[in-house]
Length: 381
Image 1 (cartoon, rainbow, N blue to C red):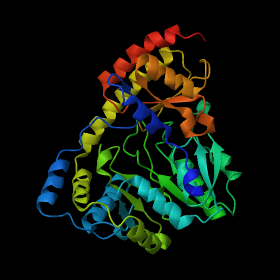
Image 2 (cartoon, rainbow, N blue to C red; image 1 turned 90 degrees about the vertical axis):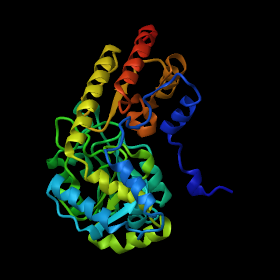
Image 3 (cartoon, rainbow, N blue to C red; image 1 turned 90 degrees about the horizontal axis):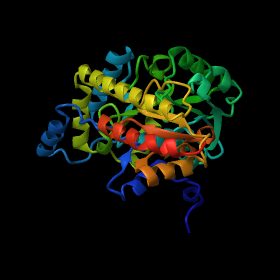
Image 4 (cartoon, helix red, strand yellow; image 1 turned 135 degrees about the vertical axis):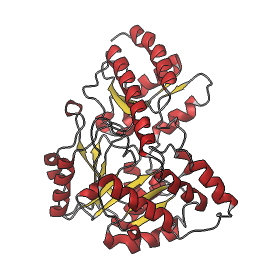
């Protein structure tokens, strides 16, 4: 019999859509956040050289010292933040890092506060460790930006964790420093631990993304190589751990993960050493794709109401179209061959939206726009 824990896990609808769309040869994929860029120059060579050197055995569960030092150096030069490499645990992707944080923090029944909208998988991480999901609503008319006042009613002495995401999936919102500082102060007053998902850092447009580590050492920080370094399939991430939790998280990593792949960790060092000009060029291309898609969304008469400042997603309101977001997404896939993600995947507040990803190449985005132009013109509203 399937456990109650497993039965409570909801599907990741974006991946369901991807699976269905992959059964056809003519689909334009705007449903998943899969960067079309190659990893930085030298990353593949570093992995091959490491393999040829025989680096296929286990490493320490918390990761190779060279990579943990490189990650600490990244925080120093990017944010001016001093992070002890001993607080860094390397993980096979950022999702296992989130599982480690939840396992270290949350006991059955403990409340964990999320924003709504939120990344689709967050509630399932909370439920898997027996936590109770509570949400704070975000609104399109202020760009889905969290306000500290909105969290004051949600956090109290019983709240175990506050899970933040900036730049955010699915909204593209980026929290400013003042908001992060205010949330840190609120978390300290209520003895709540912040878990900050910063996987989209580096992909911000015309604003600066701040790490929570600029304001506190007592937060878990998730990050990795999938997004800004285009290394999704390499499965390499990291978790910065508050000092009080270092040994507990290391024990969990030893038991649950063993270690991230040895040679992939060497490739991670090469990625972190890549020139900043490469990331700047990636950002510029993403910004162009975002603006192309935003113009199309406006032409289609879909309400956006804000400009995404980071990540590579647009959340478009389809509440004036016939059917719910699941039905609209099905229509786009079946009639136009364009795969998008229904907003219901991202919480109640996103239920009447579609998430469109501009991580794919410009030509594919333009093809999707051309296909959808006629479709939206033919829909009765």
